[in-house]
Image 1: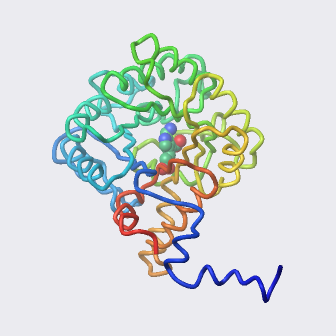
Image 2: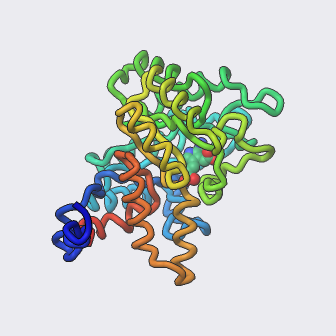
Length: 327
Ligand code: PBG
């Protein structure tokens, strides 16, 4: 049957009809809010390229986390800014480092909130690369034990999920083994499995102070042109013991999210990264688009593509909108 018998507009006529037949849902509990934590007290240093986001000291972070928990947001993911950087990223795996300290504080301040710990060396190395160097290349196998140590330190400090973002080969296996041996066999790993070498990480690198001091990350992060290769990355990470896999960034890679969901049928996270946030914010601040609607449309499209969980800098401003219900 076709027009005039079939009229798809009939089910679009009112808000109630549209809500009833909506295919994709989005709730605050699907969202994870990234937070940047630094040393000191009473620090709330704005990140210029990410309006509304700050580098926070642990006391301030705890206040924000309580508010995030009250808003019903699914969790937070922590990125640490160390006191000092060095060639091997020592503070990343120091039990008294900034992220373990923050995790312990958040467990007390917001006990019900899921705490994700990003595992990578780039915020902690003086050269800004995601692992230790051998000349000008990142030495994959020398980096693995350091990542595994960081993961164990974070689990011991209270991390509920461990999320390696370094893109070294074999890191999921190394981390799984270390967690099991360290007494954390039940701590899940969310691997940044398909992480692309993206221009959209620019604002994050300002926030996390993690811009590479030479070269770029194309020797370990993926080529934006490749999707079959992403399937191989995901397959390997699952084999190595990943409990959930991530695609990052989100909007330029919706096809990859969809393929991962269809092919593997596992829990999928997508990272709506800093540049995706900054683009909408900048346009909204200029009055060029409606920022709230653009954010909602972005997030629903990421869910529609197949993501179960979305890491997004919009979490805090969008949670109250979701609580009112999508119109
Ligand atoms: C670090 C890491 C990055 C992001 C998350 N973890 C940056 C990078 O690889 O340079 C980016 C997040 C964002 O842009 O919001 N390994």
